[in-house]
Length: 178
Image 1: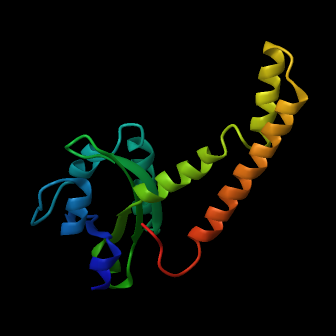
Image 2: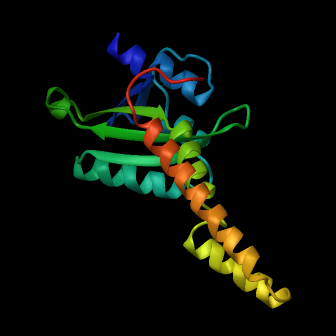
């Protein structure tokens, strides 16, 4: 129950045989048909975003060669061409130490990435630097009326107060409107 509600995919990698076993959630996350049995590492590698594959390989290989737990954030490209952001944690549990097996969990962090992007861009053009850039651009184009500058400052303050309120409200426990 805990695993199904957590929406994590579970995998196991046999270091000696270089074979991976994926659970149903993992297959769903990666957009592939359920596979019963072992898969070669190339299956996973073929789904990792080309810009992330070398870094992902390096981190995984280092963890495997040193028998160290590791964490990895990367993107995948599903067979339907959807790009997803994945977070992975891998560990060498004691019960597998003698069998050269690493066990891992991974989950889709697309919502976290989207939320972080929204917060980062919510302030674009209205942060302290944004108002300064706005003033500079306007002065470069022509004279900027003091009244307009005052209104922009008031707008900046109102937007900042609004985003601060919503940031605070989104962290409060209890039911939320959807």
